[in-house]
Image (cartoon, rainbow, N blue to C red; front, side, top):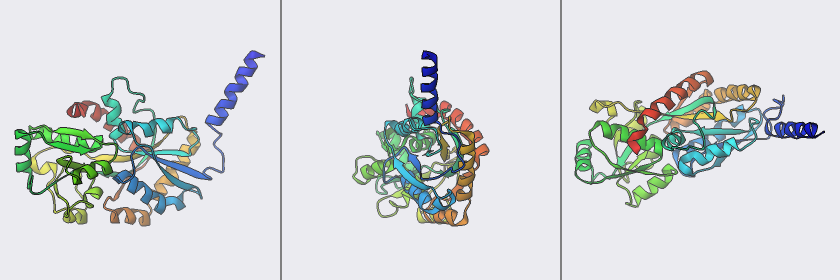
Length: 313
């Protein structure tokens, strides 16, 4: 009898945690979790995607939720603590991966997610005050003379650190929970440099700063590049740049039928000309990878991050 009771309790728990892949999926609300606060690039683009792409999700509503904290790991833990039923989606960047790889006893392994696609990729653009650093050479010279503080999320800081290291210099890297917070501190004069996405850089340049360098391996869209004053790329100085994906995933225990259904709806939305046009207008075009391609790229990215993480420490 005790065995039967335990079995029944376990079955009941499992039926709550992982409902059968029902034919009415999706219905109701899909919670779109981002591990950053309001005001940053991820928040703005997630809300743009929810507004433009919702019609592709079978009548379900996309509800963007902010769960910042702990180097963007709080959002990941939140996703893993939700029922694995396909109604919680995680849209993140490399920031929480970098945080996890930096910890000796990390609460999550970067493999504890099922990658369902890439929505975009972004650059790390360094924005500075022109009177302090009018060009790259003056910036490198200053780095070698005095401490320079650079603020941003961990992923954006890694892009900066990667290029600065290749220039034979170093800086003080200040991690923020969201790009919005680092921009506020930059505008307030509390940090010397803001490492931001190209879409965020457009909100700063030219009124409150200049784009010093695109540390990425990908070129900015022509209109964005022009609006930012055509900043040089890492490769212009003989450096290898880094690009960062905005990846989308689910709890690894989610029923395969639901993950496959979501991946198909996500692809339809991300390749919709109206949605892609809206993103392009927002300064960060969609660079879509399907489930299989994104999963392979994600694994390679994690391995690369393991080797590069020492730059921020």
